[in-house]
Image (cartoon, rainbow, N blue to C red):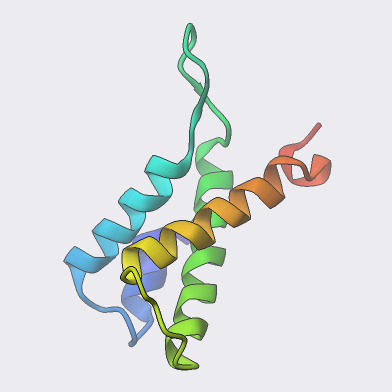
Length: 96
């Protein structure tokens, strides 16, 4: 299931602009690890998995009333970065 299909099925986030901006956050957090070849830390499937996990956590935080001092995109960025840090060192997830 794609990131956009999942979010369009979720009644909490049905606005296309917001979904696109959240996906941009996920894409921007996936850093280049080899500038010669342009390799990213995560492939497309891994990026999608991280994005879906992040949006699930984000929606739960919003529904629970968590205060987001610096805005929703900054908060989502933090969630994505934390998940990427966690999964980067998970050898099973990375397929090493």
